[in-house]
Image (cartoon, rainbow, N blue to C red; front, side, top):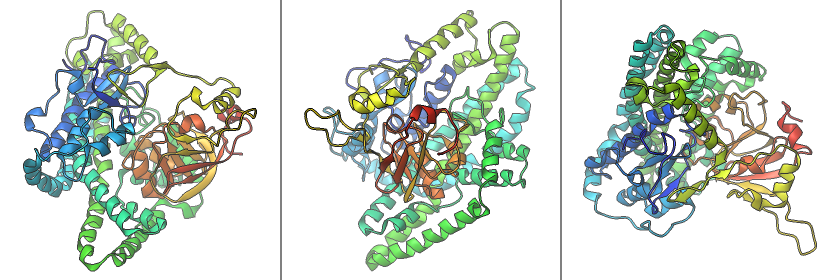
Length: 580
């Protein structure tokens, strides 16, 4: 059964009872509750792209590079409008790859090793992996750069034409964008799993053995340069200082914007208001904050750290260490290159669909041009249902229902949604702190419980997650719920659920970043290391435990966020800009 054709509608599926699912690491790709058009564009490409990547290194038979018929056999599915990954599948891949392990994969997704998931590796695929993996690793950089090279100019040629297309032309543009988008998803999957993940794992293992000072280790995982996101930061700096025009900036970066992974979102080329706001904040920074000069300093620090690392190793280990350091510089930036390419392809799909919506609303087929995003790509490039307007209303209502609930981070079989808890008054957070069980979270650590007869448990003293590097910083929290960054001020500690590439623009202004979702290779972690901002990811509940106005100390190395002082009136801080 295709992704878009389930009895429950295009945004909900049913799984068999024994499959484990996790939303971990999905939030960056699928922010919030997706639209039917987004899911139908993304899911088949993700499924086939990741499978093709594992087949390329020999971990998966080539015959399995397809979309399985049964939901529980797919590596990605959608539940209540949210994407989730099949943990059983990734554990199976972990068992098939040397140097990996299924129990480590399971703990990454689930926090433990449930019954029914194998704990040991297997040698069954070793002959195929031994032949294919070295070749794939040797050629992946050249392959990613070659295949992504034409995409930006292709996007730049399409953007001026999108507003002039008639209905058949916009339909053809959407079909062409779908093909290009799926190709780039294949490239991204291969680049991440073959080029980036394996090199990062080897670098992390090397640093663990070397036992270096934290500042040296931080320098080695950043300073690689040539990241797409750091180019965005440098151009925002130039825009803020008047040496780059807005038109030129949008020609280079207009596919970015709030919730850019969702095809229905309005990106910067459609609404440049967030860009102008960011440029104004960049203009207020001291000249010594120049991101170009800072990048040179970090690259120098990385080279010095490389020398320190090599000097700390026995002579026989230095050749292997030099190879790992070289690969880190050439491979880790591939993550951003491939992601930029598929976002550019997605933006052409966005523009084509929006143009289709305008035509269909003008013809009376749809009530609202934005209702076009309630349909799947097959419906839009083929034949729309006869009752298109009514069907759009039903799907919009279902999506609203999904937005009113939350899902656990992981589950077995099918998830149990919970009503989304709103906090309309300042007493809500105090009540939650007095009874942490009201909102379960896996990141905060409560202070010691009081003895009988004393007040209820104190508020959490800290939040814990994965240290993504960058040292230590203290500042005032800004919980960011507006992806347009309307209230963000320079020097704040940003606390968010997840990030996408557009966040690089505001991360540069910030003292530190704390994210509910993510791992060492998530977007937030990679960019934070590259620009030297302390970062903690994977907290699970940072946005629920912290409030705007709290003062915290972020330890980017250990993954601990100390709560130094609580805001006197968190509700008031949520509605005002600036810092105390």
